[in-house]
Image (cartoon, rainbow, N blue to C red):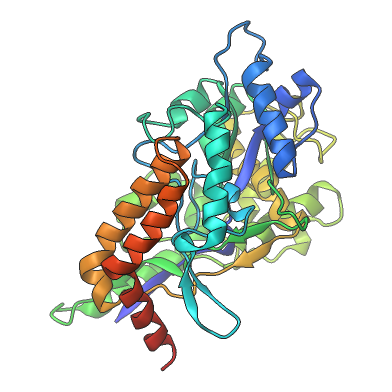
Length: 395
């Protein structure tokens, strides 16, 4: 028996995070299309957006040597939205209209995306130390980055810079595809299970503890216990994230309506929302009018609640804004299991893919290397894996 930790819907959607203060300094509008993104990234690199008189800024931040260019679901610092612009979904199993599954990494759309991203890199608009530097947060928190990609919760990542009043980050669905829509891959249903072995003497104990944690977590958060005396990471695997699939969208929309005066706290049912009451109590102290303006000077950075609550509120009101107010077209992974051939060959196939993509993007290999990769991927187990997946799904 096992209990999965469900991923919330918002977790797999990567957004563009951008320095609004840099846009203001250079008199630029928020980029939405590919060409607009290129123009803004170039300006961030060449026009001294931080005003220090030095050519030391990064247009688009990339993943570090421990991150990934592409990922399943949320992928902070990855380049997933650049691929999705061309409806390319590396590492995803995509289902055609006839039900046949194909692998996203070997599709023509991925070849196109790699070629376009390679040009961004060779034009020095993407971090030159991508996949080389040890930690992408270092230049980000040092104020040297104009754009990066990641999920709604990146408000926590930039929290220190926001709390210090040093950077004004906003989030958007950019770049839009040629048809004007924003395509995004979604998170897998779960990435973690709590499993009770059949040899466990009291298997029911684990599940009773989980039930107890879920039942009391809201009260512990309100009383401050969950952030001081007990921390979720200390109690894994039993204290996992168990939440509503739409938790972020509901929380963001509720806060927006509350700030706009459309609802009061009496209108909200907190029984199924473990953090929302705390969020609503904090936002009235931390957010200044006008409530729909998220400029740094519209936050009360002198409040005692800044360190405990501001990163989450920025994540919800800034990172969650596109999820509630804009439209996106979701793309789901058609297969999340493991076939017999994957057990022995998948690690090598993924390694070959990541190395090939890195060489192409960084200009160390011509785009024709993609064709060789596709050929080798199929021969070295990929075709057999596709057959096994399609056979399994057709049963």
